[in-house]
Length: 203
Length: 157
Image (cartoon, helix red, strand yellow):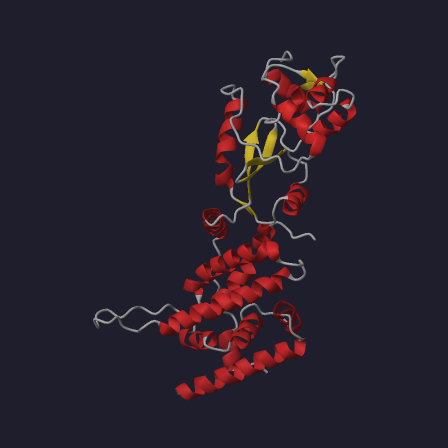
């Protein structure tokens, strides 16, 4: 029993929503009001499309394709804050420095790091790793020693394997003492690429 | 307790809420209301105690923003004080302006139910979930809203 009134109510044309514009305005306002706890965007690189996540404290996560963005964002929601928005312009500085690194115009990153995703010994290992300079390499035992526990090289390996900020925290510079490449979250091909880019391995 | 990343809420619900707000306040104010809805939600989000039916939670906020917009519109003078150019009233609805002005003026729950029924074309069970009320209450809100609209429309004639 549709009458005239119901007919007039139905079939209202709805203008399309500019979702990109909405997201942009939300991110800007959220940042202005201190409500943007995690912003993320992507960076095209020779190693694939990287996802960059930043907080007001600094870079908190950088991930390779295929690492499962949904799970990572959920981890950030659980451990840092659920106030997370896609806001690529907030990741511009990281993008700029990564571009320069891959184009051989930059050897060190000048970025603040938010270490909230790493705890305890893993944090010590990754901080020690962050001090290994461009073009040098270290071993699992050396970073374990630097982190204060020379015998904990297996734990050091685990910490490096779960490095939330690869490339910038250069876990690719840590190799097996015997000369083997060791492991790499992003896959050994990527580790080799980075070591070649830094002149450690022959291209 | 897992709250999904807020981005997920924007992704999942922005389009539907936009359509809802177009029906509630018209296309011009809908985008602002939508933005205000998400900003209020973002402010409160970390304090939410559970993630059940986040859509209904967003609808509660959107309904409030629509009510605020309707009230602002009612307070706005038709002409400014100098008696010069009339301030153009925002268009209420996309096609049938007078009717949609009336929809905007319905009590909030009736307005929400009517818009969900006729603009979003939702079944009563779906309206009930979104409004966190029973299906029967959803039906009642729609029919009360329609009754009122019919009365007002016939008064106009």
